[in-house]
Image 1: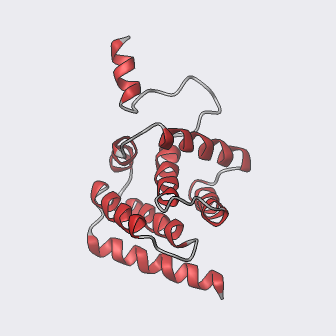
Image 2: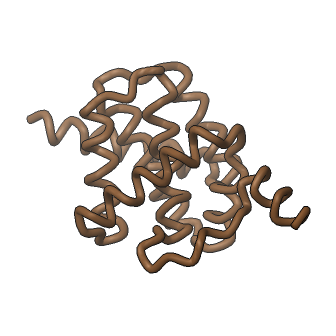
Length: 154
Protein backbone atom coordinates (compact mmCIF):
# COMPACT_ATOMS: atom_id res chain seq x y z
CA UNK A 1 0.00 0.00 0.00
CA UNK A 2 2.80 2.40 0.89
CA UNK A 3 4.51 1.54 -2.41
CA UNK A 4 1.36 2.49 -4.33
CA UNK A 5 1.16 5.81 -2.46
CA UNK A 6 4.81 6.61 -3.20
CA UNK A 7 4.31 5.64 -6.86
CA UNK A 8 1.23 7.84 -7.07
CA UNK A 9 2.99 10.85 -5.55
CA UNK A 10 5.95 10.34 -7.90
CA UNK A 11 3.62 10.17 -10.92
CA UNK A 12 4.32 6.49 -11.50
CA UNK A 13 0.93 5.10 -10.57
CA UNK A 14 -0.45 2.53 -12.96
CA UNK A 15 -3.66 3.52 -14.68
CA UNK A 16 -6.80 1.83 -13.50
CA UNK A 17 -7.75 -1.21 -15.51
CA UNK A 18 -9.83 0.48 -18.15
CA UNK A 19 -10.09 -0.50 -21.78
CA UNK A 20 -10.35 3.16 -22.80
CA UNK A 21 -7.38 4.37 -20.75
CA UNK A 22 -4.91 6.26 -22.95
CA UNK A 23 -1.57 4.65 -23.78
CA UNK A 24 1.37 5.80 -21.61
CA UNK A 25 3.30 7.03 -24.67
CA UNK A 26 0.33 9.05 -25.86
CA UNK A 27 0.00 10.57 -22.40
CA UNK A 28 3.70 11.36 -22.09
CA UNK A 29 3.86 13.11 -25.45
CA UNK A 30 0.57 14.93 -24.90
CA UNK A 31 1.70 16.10 -21.46
CA UNK A 32 4.88 17.62 -22.88
CA UNK A 33 2.94 19.32 -25.68
CA UNK A 34 0.45 20.72 -23.18
CA UNK A 35 3.29 21.93 -20.97
CA UNK A 36 4.78 23.75 -23.99
CA UNK A 37 1.40 25.41 -24.60
CA UNK A 38 1.04 26.42 -20.94
CA UNK A 39 4.55 27.81 -20.62
CA UNK A 40 3.54 31.32 -21.72
CA UNK A 41 0.54 31.30 -19.33
CA UNK A 42 -1.89 31.38 -22.26
CA UNK A 43 -3.08 27.98 -23.53
CA UNK A 44 -5.10 29.29 -26.45
CA UNK A 45 -7.25 27.72 -29.16
CA UNK A 46 -4.46 27.72 -31.76
CA UNK A 47 -2.17 25.80 -29.41
CA UNK A 48 -4.90 23.28 -28.59
CA UNK A 49 -5.70 22.82 -32.28
CA UNK A 50 -2.00 22.27 -33.01
CA UNK A 51 -1.73 19.70 -30.21
CA UNK A 52 -4.83 17.88 -31.46
CA UNK A 53 -3.52 17.77 -35.04
CA UNK A 54 -0.05 16.61 -33.98
CA UNK A 55 -1.33 13.85 -31.70
CA UNK A 56 -3.95 12.66 -34.17
CA UNK A 57 -1.30 12.43 -36.89
CA UNK A 58 1.47 10.92 -34.74
CA UNK A 59 -0.66 8.26 -33.06
CA UNK A 60 -3.56 7.91 -35.55
CA UNK A 61 -6.16 8.70 -32.88
CA UNK A 62 -9.92 8.98 -33.30
CA UNK A 63 -11.61 12.14 -32.02
CA UNK A 64 -12.80 10.33 -28.90
CA UNK A 65 -9.38 8.84 -28.15
CA UNK A 66 -7.76 12.22 -28.84
CA UNK A 67 -10.06 13.98 -26.37
CA UNK A 68 -9.39 11.28 -23.76
CA UNK A 69 -5.61 11.60 -24.18
CA UNK A 70 -5.67 15.38 -23.95
CA UNK A 71 -7.95 15.39 -20.90
CA UNK A 72 -5.82 12.78 -19.11
CA UNK A 73 -2.60 14.60 -20.02
CA UNK A 74 -3.98 17.91 -18.74
CA UNK A 75 -4.82 16.26 -15.41
CA UNK A 76 -1.33 14.73 -15.23
CA UNK A 77 0.34 18.08 -15.97
CA UNK A 78 -1.79 19.91 -13.40
CA UNK A 79 -0.91 17.43 -10.65
CA UNK A 80 2.75 16.86 -11.49
CA UNK A 81 5.57 19.20 -10.62
CA UNK A 82 8.14 17.30 -12.66
CA UNK A 83 8.78 16.13 -16.20
CA UNK A 84 10.62 12.94 -15.26
CA UNK A 85 7.67 10.52 -15.60
CA UNK A 86 7.05 11.81 -19.12
CA UNK A 87 10.64 12.16 -20.31
CA UNK A 88 11.69 8.85 -18.78
CA UNK A 89 8.92 6.98 -20.60
CA UNK A 90 9.89 8.66 -23.87
CA UNK A 91 13.60 7.89 -23.42
CA UNK A 92 12.92 4.24 -22.65
CA UNK A 93 10.59 3.56 -25.56
CA UNK A 94 11.52 5.92 -28.40
CA UNK A 95 14.45 6.11 -30.77
CA UNK A 96 16.52 9.29 -31.20
CA UNK A 97 14.57 10.03 -34.38
CA UNK A 98 11.25 9.73 -32.54
CA UNK A 99 12.52 11.87 -29.65
CA UNK A 100 13.65 14.51 -32.14
CA UNK A 101 10.17 14.38 -33.67
CA UNK A 102 8.70 15.08 -30.20
CA UNK A 103 10.92 18.16 -29.92
CA UNK A 104 9.74 19.28 -33.37
CA UNK A 105 6.14 18.81 -32.23
CA UNK A 106 6.86 20.91 -29.14
CA UNK A 107 8.38 23.67 -31.33
CA UNK A 108 5.22 23.57 -33.46
CA UNK A 109 3.10 24.15 -30.36
CA UNK A 110 5.38 26.90 -29.10
CA UNK A 111 5.19 28.75 -32.43
CA UNK A 112 1.48 28.08 -33.07
CA UNK A 113 0.41 31.37 -31.48
CA UNK A 114 2.93 33.29 -33.60
CA UNK A 115 5.28 34.19 -30.76
CA UNK A 116 8.04 32.25 -29.02
CA UNK A 117 7.97 33.11 -25.33
CA UNK A 118 11.35 32.89 -23.52
CA UNK A 119 9.80 30.36 -21.12
CA UNK A 120 8.80 28.15 -24.04
CA UNK A 121 12.33 28.33 -25.43
CA UNK A 122 13.75 27.41 -22.02
CA UNK A 123 11.36 24.46 -21.70
CA UNK A 124 12.30 23.14 -25.15
CA UNK A 125 15.99 23.29 -24.29
CA UNK A 126 15.36 21.54 -20.98
CA UNK A 127 13.17 18.78 -22.43
CA UNK A 128 15.60 18.21 -25.32
CA UNK A 129 18.32 17.63 -22.73
CA UNK A 130 16.15 15.33 -20.65
CA UNK A 131 15.24 13.14 -23.63
CA UNK A 132 18.79 13.24 -25.00
CA UNK A 133 18.19 15.17 -28.21
CA UNK A 134 21.48 16.88 -29.17
CA UNK A 135 21.56 20.64 -29.84
CA UNK A 136 22.06 20.16 -33.57
CA UNK A 137 18.95 17.99 -33.91
CA UNK A 138 16.98 20.33 -31.63
CA UNK A 139 17.93 23.26 -33.87
CA UNK A 140 17.00 21.36 -37.02
CA UNK A 141 13.66 20.40 -35.47
CA UNK A 142 13.07 24.07 -34.69
CA UNK A 143 13.77 25.06 -38.30
CA UNK A 144 11.39 22.38 -39.61
CA UNK A 145 8.65 23.56 -37.23
CA UNK A 146 9.16 27.19 -38.28
CA UNK A 147 8.99 26.21 -41.95
CA UNK A 148 5.76 24.27 -41.34
CA UNK A 149 4.21 27.23 -39.51
CA UNK A 150 5.22 29.56 -42.34
CA UNK A 151 3.78 27.16 -44.94
CA UNK A 152 0.43 27.04 -43.09
CA UNK A 153 0.26 30.85 -43.10
CA UNK A 154 0.90 31.13 -46.86
